[in-house]
Length: 501
Image (cartoon, rainbow, N blue to C red; front, side, top):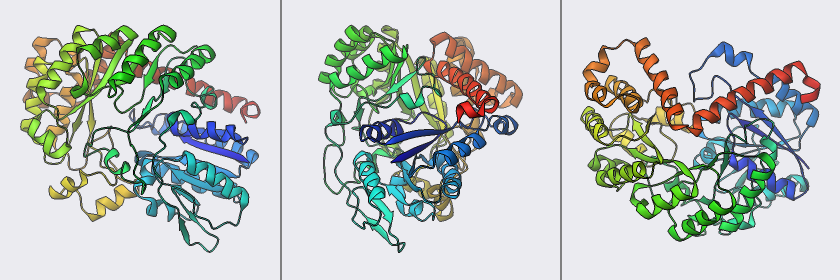
């Protein structure tokens, strides 16, 4: 069978694993990549440049020539509407192809997604077993048997709903991520993305994990690990094949299993020995962990603070760490010279200017190397939606927009119901680590308000690149290499269309 994966913007590990499974089962696989340069949500949107570097014509020509039997999408809320746009065109170009949608957004609102006439299958929850069954179902044609973790449309347009099976417990039973499909598109050498586990032990109200873990009818462990051997095998092969230089572990909490972590880091130091980045939680971070990470080559860690007010953080966000835990983690990271990225959400429901001032004062004394402020973005089925209604930020009309991926707000632009102090403190948090200590004391809310927009923009850009250079940020290095490689790839495909189609 011929299978096409249509990917939007950034490397998707879900596509990597499904592609590996499809190839293992003997199917033909093609990646159709839409880079969305200059409108990807990580930079400001530049419409003229976005049109200039669009590869839609090439994508549709590839699709027309390939004529796949199955076209698969893995989508998040932010890219859902873009995915629908391409899926509808795909159906017109390949009317006999079946279209399947999976991903977090699909799992949260499957009825909304399956209602689109050009979508044939939706996958709810983990998709590896479901995807194999969908392939068989497409091959067999007329069957009306339910498919695990899947809703699909029968020929009479009724929806057949399969049971929600438990999560895959043996992650080693899955093949390694298929990176070969990305090699012409992404700078694998610069930045190699992988995961050693699935699931999160925490239950933050704004995160998909709290509803996702309850999807299966069959209860099973939600937090699972690949074996040390399995991960090392993958990285050894990638190191040899792609000459990788930096690794990021995309696990929700990389350090939660101390026994596994110790064994893994010892093997990693001996056999891989490359700089890496991972995600931690301050409640699980201690001196032994810091020492082991540093010794194995960890250069950067990311962790969430999200709000500095302890009472608010516990009540609204369901985060139980104390500020003392945050301070201790920052001190350990500085002691072992591991660069700290601290995430902070701006525009939360019920948040106050006093909380931001509390954060400003806190960071003067306890400064992460980089603060990453994100605007509050509501996602379907997340528990914090209740607080949005409680504070009259959300209503039925806005929820309908969110469920359909039409919420105009995102992590990178102003949040719904944001106020002027949100924008000012967003700016303060972003530039704070780039300022000398004496200037941090002087950059208050009232001072920030006096700066015109173009001055703030210059400071904003300066802080991003200054901190990236100072701390050798893998993200900036990746995005710079990514944009350069994508631009060259698109130019080549326009000049030599036959070669790239």
